[in-house]
Length: 141
Image 1: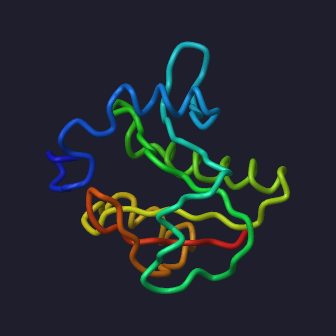
Image 2: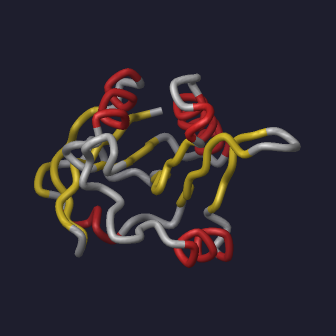
């Protein structure tokens, strides 16, 4: 991300222990085939505590799915795998009776910002983590 000019995901984050933690909690999902992983993300149905203190306003207070740490393998970037991953997360949420999808990203993550706009996510405000502020988005499914 640094090569693309983004300050998000610096200083070793996400680290292998973050991914191991995702997997141990049942959050780690991949998109791929039998020999390759094209995309990875943490799909969380347990809520996100940072989202309780939004500077702004969510579209609703319904249960939601949140996606963290979406990453696409360099060799398949710009082939639609991030979009497909997001669409599959939405399908998984709907299968579980969840009709709201939330996500946050850094202000300079142009790839994610463009993806969120193209998928009709609505900017709802700013949230804060220890690592800094993020732009928060939501989409009703």
